[in-house]
Length: 260
Image (cartoon, rainbow, N blue to C red; front, side, top):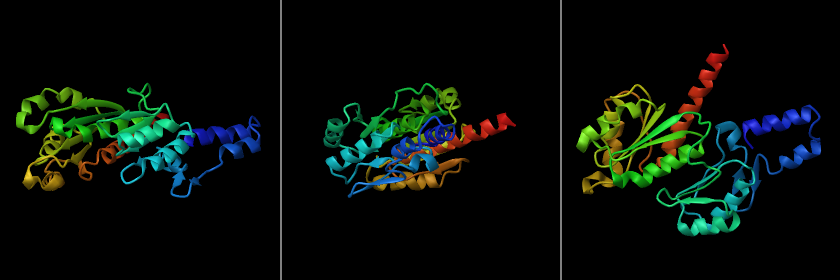
């Protein structure tokens, strides 16, 4: 249940087009559904703009599958991150339409490759090919959240001409997600080229002194460029969620301005 569907349901009851009993039946399990080992939150989409997301790491495959199936019943997009092939097999047994994005380790349902009516555009930029798993987690998550995604990969600062050739593409986005390991310098460089928000994602890619992504994290936190926000190490999903929230908020404010 999201804001649009709840509004439609209540108006149908108000206009006499839907019996109260049917509306009650549709709202069963709301705001959350207790399935013993988890409480599936069906209210999340109304107050956060997107349904509850399943974090697969640490869950048994059958647990992920049961939660996925319950969320699938809502008719809204379903997103599960940090999932294994075994988890996908369990999900697919219950929801055959589910799709596994192997590189991103993400399972989705009702997520198109390209949104017909996107809320905005997010550019996902990587320093190197080794950052692709985190980048794909961000890209697939952003698509699920209703955004158009522009992928700009392997444009790290070691070969700055590669990034400069993509300057026009960067400026077409409302938010840029920059994903980099090593020293994490790419976020500062990109932010210095544009006047839009940059969400920086440090990755655990690098040699020993990278300290599993800590050097990139500290470098991004100490960026001298304006408009850089930093999420946790390897957190592609978190970056997509923040970027989509910024885009959604901007779309809402633009609509209000247009109405005035």
